[in-house]
Image 1 (cartoon, one colour):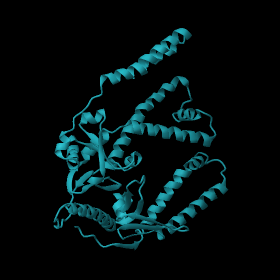
Image 2 (cartoon, one colour):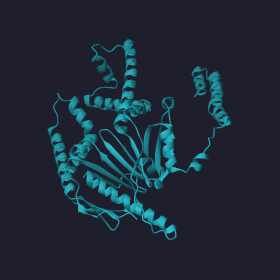
Image 3 (cartoon, one colour):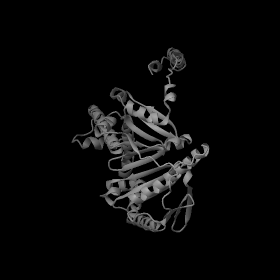
Image 4 (cartoon, one colour):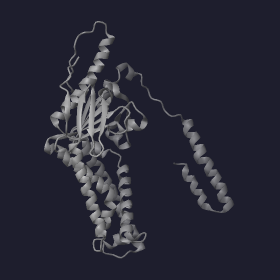
Length: 408
């Protein structure tokens, strides 16, 4: 059985963690008060409320000081096969996580992490919706040592169970080094970005834009639709309903922005995507600016889901996700996604999770044509006939638009 490393006495995070605590605080403040900031920006020429500004400064100062004190009162250690965390300034809390309950360990190294030679660490347990423990900044050697300690302990439990099933099994086993299963080159990541779903960022962009416009209208005291006239004025012309078709030119621009957003996002998240494995599980590392590394045991993977879109099928690519044993909401939160994989790469992953005879037992089923016919009958033909009767009775011919349900 594998020997466990030295235990961990109580210790703090790296001093660099104070920078990340402050950064997290600033992001929270921006998310909370960004509508107020918009009012200040668009009302810069008007007289402001100085007492409210001083209140914001006072509130921010208190939270910054509290965050710095929280760093010095945050300790973690390992003892008796459990991970302990003690934190709190005015109210002290202590959390205990049994090592055998830990399900996934994730290392996050942003660009700022790598400048200071540290990494973040997230630890999740079975049944948790969010990470049970988040360490903002540890030295790389310290994070690896803690991760190796936990994984070695979990492997030792599995080895002990295996030896108990074998009569006379006294031979010690040593952990196998991780082997590279596949690695995505930059061109492969670029193709994966091109083949992503571009509709989702488009909808997010439009929702964010209209939400911001609503706040701008309120901040400037404008009436409904005033922002449209102000936008036209930026192009040096007065609002004219006959020139409204000009806004159609924004459609390809917005589509281009959504495609570029998907491409850049995929490249940043999945650059240098590397999948490694040993006898117990897999290790997935990915990211350009924010380097992330996931560790997952084979026995914790419940099922694999793969999916494609028309563009991915044309490029012969696919996405797939690993789901762990948990409720649906928790499993979705803890799913690991690999994008732009080829069929060969996906088959390599399946060969690690399932035996060859199990994979040979898969065969496809198709939906019966009767199911499609039944849906057409109830949700297209019947409403159309009813709408036609209503149209002849009321002389409202707009009811005939219900016939558009047929192609849908």
